Length: 341
Ligand code: SAM
Ligand code: DTB
Ligand code: SF4
Image (tube, rainbow, N blue to C red; front, side):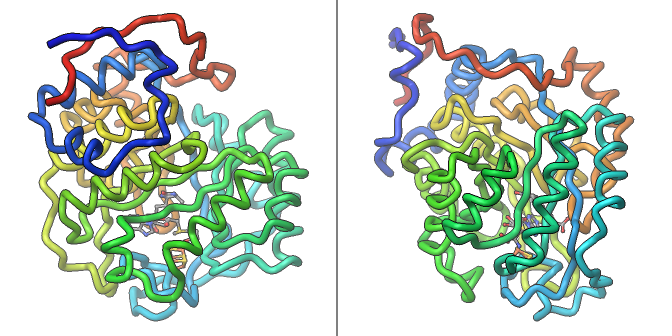
């Protein structure tokens, strides 16, 4: 059965968990067709947004996130480092810009920033903006006041992941709660900063958990502007280093369902790209992924060579998304697709 759906009807924050499960578990071809149809309505399907990530403060984190090489509780052999100097950070941002990135993301292994460190990060944000790049930071939990200070500095995006379903969350992190995460997202959104929030798949969760994780993002009062879908990078020494591999098609399902549930979001193929073939990348782009991290590393683990990403773009006819381009929201175009179920 086919039906016509107007663009504004596709932006919903009242999804039920049953609806999300139905979307996620429908036959793969139906899922991809629905996701790709929605993708074309909101974005140029041949554009991919390019971000570059830098760890500005590495390791010795007091939190116990079982996936994370930077937790001070696990022995991963990681060299810990203090907060980087502003000039060194801006050198990296310039290099990222020369390589084609339009957004520069800075990550710190903190439970939350202290006010002195936040002052330093604010100078970094201003420097990145002065280069004509979008800025993003991920610093852990924030108070309303800290979020406001970041907004005043001109920060474009704040990344704070919900990571997984509320049901599975306690198996992965015990030092802060799922609702702590929602509180930080609320502070960020109230401050007027775009939210970047997603999570990790391949941690031993079920497909029902993956649907529930996406449901939580899709019922936020405003959908995140960016949704990073990380495939677990198994780092030796973390409690999840030997978890069973996820079926790669489940990764594509997660991307496709995210695209359907949050049509205007940039859905990012985030961590885990070293384990993904060109063909899996291509399938994820078709399913609605339209952002990647480009560069040598994520925070502490490697990324594919930039050259390899650009070669695949050439083979697929993909262009980097210009920074000025944002999805149209005219609401007067119609979409035809096979309704789920
Ligand atoms: N410390 C801050 C926080 O946790 O809010 C910011 C940095 S933290 C490393 C950012 C995100 O990276 C985490 O929320 C998690 O989703 C992702 N991440 C960390 N380690 C990962 C891994 N081994 N594989 C995939 N994603 C990972
Ligand atoms: C996100 O969702 N993934 C990025 C970024 N936001 C900060 C971090 C991935 C980290 C992967 C493990 C590492 O390189 O340390
Ligand atoms: Fe710390 Fe963030 Fe890693 Fe958790 S994910 S251990 S909060 S750096």
